[in-house]
Length: 446
Ligand SMILES: [Zn+2]
Image 1 (cartoon, rainbow, N blue to C red):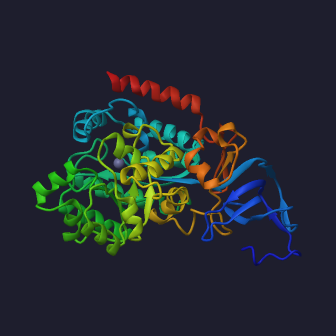
Image 2 (spheres, protein in one colour):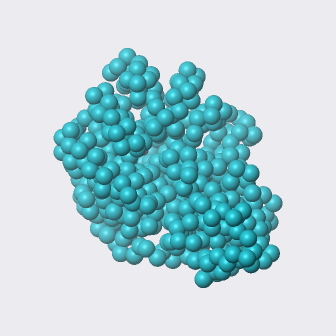
Image 3 (cartoon, helix red, strand yellow):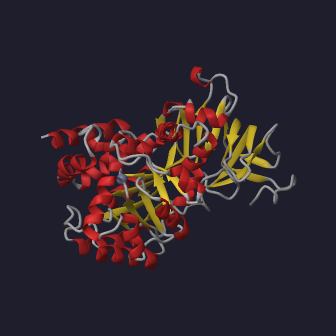
C-alpha cells in the first residue's frame, strides 16, 4: 500500500500512529513534515506525511503523541564487534599492533559462548537506547550474536570472523567455513538477522582462505566483509608478505567486488580510491576508532566524491569505547573539517545520510530500511527535542549531528516492534545483563 493508493473512502487499520512530531524522512527529496506522523502496520510503514490532522482513512489501534519530538529512521551501526563491550576500557592508549596482539587477542583467547552472548546483549541494550536499530557485526561465536540480536529485536548482519589460525569457536580454519555456511542456512529466512562471510583482514587470511570466503559469498549471495587498509602498519605488513598494498592485493586476487564491504579504508592512494569506486566496493568509516588507535583519517570525503557507498560504524567497544552512533556522527563531521582545515566538508546533512541511508546501502538493506517511506520496514526512532541543549531549533540536521545526545532518544522501534520507550527497554533485562557482564569482567581481569 502506498500513499497514492489510499483514497478517503478506504478505511485502513493501523497498529500504531505516531503523530504531532517533526518527521525527518531522509527520503530522496529529504522531506521534513512538521507536524507530521508515521503510521505502522505489522512490520511496515504504511503512511508518512504532514498531518493537520492525520488522514481520515487511517484507523489507528494505538496512538502516540510525540509533541516536541523528532521521528526519524533508526541509525545503522555498520561495523562493530558487539561482544567487545566486555573489553570496554580494558586496554587504552596503545598502538594498534600492541593493543591487538598483547591485549585484545590474548583476552579473546578466554572468550566463550557465554561472554559473546552476554556482551552482545549489553551492546544491543546500549544501541537501542542510543537510537540504533541495525548493526553489522564481526566476531567469534557469531551464532550467539545472532541469538542475542534476535532476542533484542534488532536488525543485524552478522558473520563469524575467519583467519588462518585456530579459533576458540570452530577450531581449525577449514571448519570456520563450514560454520559460516551453517550459520547462513540457519538464519536464511529470518526477517531481521542475516549472515555474511567475514574474513578478518588480508594480513590474517591467506589468499586461499579469501578465495574460499568469496565462493561462499557468491554461492549464497551474501556480502563478504573484511577489515581493509586500517593503518600504515597493515599496509607495510602486507607489502612485506605479498609485495603490494592490501587493496591491490585483493584486486590481484579478483576479490574487489560489489559484494565486498571494506571496513576502515584509512590508508588509500588515489589509484586505490578510483579502483574501489570502479569495482563497486562499499566502505564503512569508523572515525572514533581510527582516532583512538591513531590509525589516521580515512578519505571518506574523497570516497564519497567518487560515488563509493560509505556508511558509519563505531567499531568494537575496546577501541571507541562506546556504540553511540550520534556521537560518531558528531565526530565524523568535525574530524574531516579539522583534518582538511575546511569547515565546509562533511556537512551535517551528509553525515545524517551516512548514518542511515549510507548504512542501509552499504549493508544491502536499502530496499528495507534507511528512510521513512511507505512500504519500508518500520525501523524508526524518536527523540525529545524539548531540552535546553536543543533550544532553539533552526535546522534539524545541525542539531542531530552537533547537539543531540544518545540520552535524548525516547523511542526505538525495529521491524514494527517497540524496543524502547522513555528509556525503558522492553526486550532486555538490563539489570541482569549488566550483572552478568560485570561477573565476566572479573574473570577477564584475573
Ligand atoms: Zn573492526
